[in-house]
Length: 206
Image 1: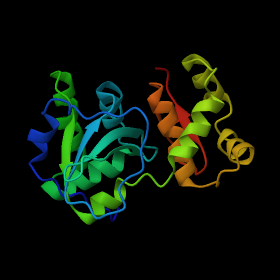
Image 2: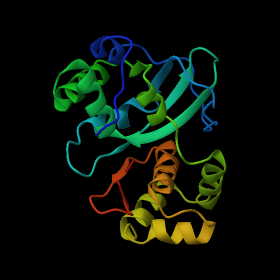
Image 3: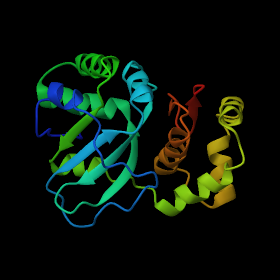
Image 4: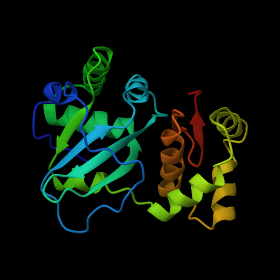
């Protein structure tokens, strides 16, 4: 992976911080102006910890809340766990599995997962690609479904459901839409990830 996050503080300390007070349920538009420092907090430390334990080629998605420290603007973004692990590992010159171990240890100790980013590559990574309007469409589409029904639906139709949603809601059939779907699922507490084959999401029970 070519994306690289530059942490403003050592990763051990960052992963051991308490959760940031800035949390936003609805995803907002990331600011257009260049950012100088972003504070990110894992939305759900338990799911985040479970995602850190997946070292396969079918990584989990994670949901983080980002805050631009210079302007106070905030937004939420869904990204792959391996992107986070690889970037932090490169910055700290350690293996990605060691980053995951530190993250899981911090969560086990009851500490929140908070980290600070400042490089242009990190800023680009933290731009969702999908729009708040897309998230609204997806939330409304599954509003009347229970979490258990979502798990069943995505489990039994995982090879077809993304394509069906794109046609139904007139969304592009690409990785950004897939991340938007994952964002919606993670908001509901449903752990999910990218399949080894493109175009589908796998889910786990809440």
